[in-house]
Each structure stands twice: as C-alpha cells, then as structure tokens.
Amino acid sequence: MGTFDHEITIRHVASNGHIATLSVGTIAFTCHIGPTGITYNKSEGDGATPAGRWPMRYVLFRADRVVRPITGLPVRAILPDSGWCDDPASRDYNRPVQLPYAQSHEKLWRTDHVYDMIVVLGHNDNPAIPGKGSAVFMHLSRPDRSATRGCIALSQNHLRQMLLRCGSGTILRIG
Image (cartoon, rainbow, N blue to C red):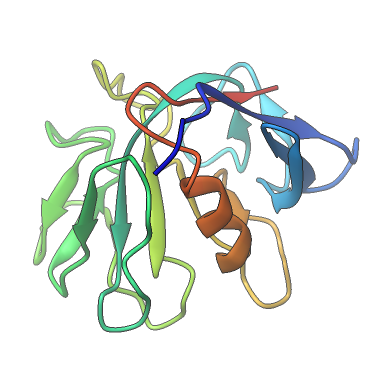
C-alpha cells in the first residue's frame, strides 16, 4: 500500500437530483446521494446526505459475495446476524447490533448487493444524538443508480479504487 489521501470530497452537481462527484486525489467518480441532496441539518428519515467532515471508521464486506477490499482502513466481514440500529429511542442508536434485535434496525446481510461492501462513516457517532441520522454509509450503487436514503453510493470498481487510497485519518468531506 502506498500513501493515503487525508481528505476525500463529495460535491452535489445536480441542484435538484441525487448525483454528486466524489474526488480522491486527482481522480473523480460519479456517486449517488439522498434524493433531497446534501443538508447541514440532518435528521432521521429526511432522505438527505449530511454535509460535514466525517472520519472513515472501517469497512464491512460480504465475504460470500465479494473479495475482501484492499485498504488501509480496518476491514470486517458482515455476518448473517449483522444489523444497525436506526431507532432514536434506543441506547444502541446509530450502532451495530446483532440480530434478532427488537427495536428498529437495518439488516446488513441483504438480498440485494447494495451492502456487499460498506464504509462506516463517523457521522453522528461520537456521541450519537437521537434523531440526527443513523446508518449513513458509503455503499454500492443499485443497478439503476437510483438515490440512496442519505448514504453515498458508488460502483464496486470505484469504491475499491477509492479504498486503495484510504487509511486511518482519512476524512470524507461532504458539501
């Protein structure tokens, strides 16, 4: 592995759409964000991607579907009982949980391929403030390249290229 980029940027390019540009070093990729664009006032379920500077915490991947990504970030496998709490009333809000889980959550082991590779971002996690947004990840784009629910989505090839340039201390700047 070579040197790592310290900052990756995302800029909204369509004023009324979900298309944005992610730049890492001198390379730029098209990515997809929430249908309501980028916001400086993120709230749970608003469909917006949160503006700000977010540390890239670690990568999760489906070992039964994709090859382990090469990156300077920590990498962990997603398991069939992997979930993420999105219930603002829970003490586990915006944290990984083990399924089954009684409160509202997302399943990370999905039938589609969107979560075959996930970058967990440090958005609203230190500490998590109830209602300010949860499960804001970088993940794989849908085949139709549709909007996310507030995450950032890239093709698998572009996500892998970006991860090659990431290590501890890499920040994602949105906005």
